[in-house]
Image (cartoon, rainbow, N blue to C red; front, side, top):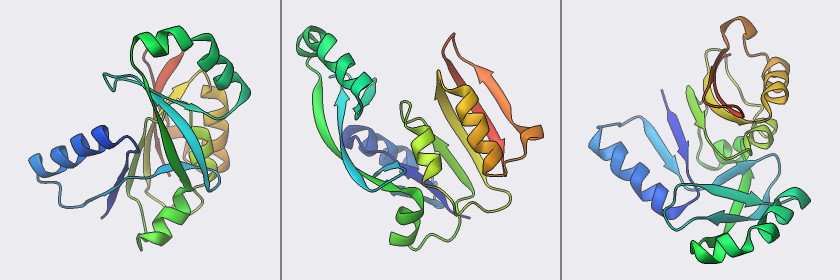
Length: 167
């Protein structure tokens, strides 16, 4: 059994490594790469407290960035270059045959990550967060043959939910 954790932000990645050791998780492979539907580079905006990230890759997000420039400067946000790769490519790169459990909280990039993940095996468990895109995420899970009868949706607030699905 192999669990995989992907975290692009270096501080969060160090916290992940610490938690893996502290909890004696010997079946987790920590990989510091971003995931999406194509191999690319994106810009990621992170606030100084590392409590939130935002990928700036399309017109809506660039407008968000420009309209919030004052807050970005005031709260000392940082910009990172993020290497994006498909989950399938990451699995091949690290000789990972199967992912039993995959958790994604990648600030709205979950749909792109799922589109780059075709090497799904029976029994695979997925936990992800949705950001105003629940219908599209559920549609993709259905296309990828996740058992829709076992999908559990846990609302967090008016625009965000946690989704648990089993293949």
